[in-house]
Length: 130
Image (cartoon, rainbow, N blue to C red):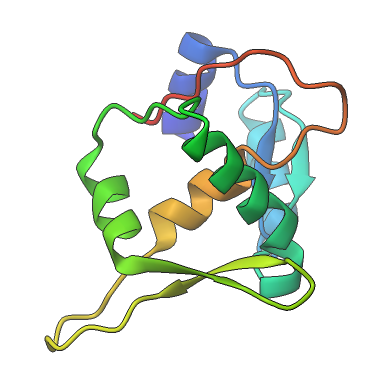
C-alpha cells in the first residue's frame, strides 16, 4: 500500500483495477491509509479479460502504447501468445517453450487490465509502465 500511495501522489491514480481475490482486503488497506482510490473489479479469466485483451491489442498495434522498454513487461510479452476464438474474443496464454524455465505473463495481464476499454468516449492518452 505504501508504494501505491507514493505512486498516487506522483500520478494521481484515478482507478485501481484488481481481480476479485482479496479485493475487500485492498479496499480496507487503502481506506486505512487515507487513500480514496476507487477499486474496480476486473476478473482475469479468459471470458472476463477478452474485451480488455482485444482493446490492448488494438491500442498496441495503433502505436498508442508506450511502456518505456520495461524489462518485465518485455519478458511477459515475449512469453505470451494471443488466441482468438470463433466469436472474435482474444485471450492471452503462455507460449510454449522447449526450456525448463517457467514462463510468466503476469505483467502483461496487469497491463491489459489497466487499459481495458473505456466506458466513456476515449481520449488521447499515454500509458506508462514504470
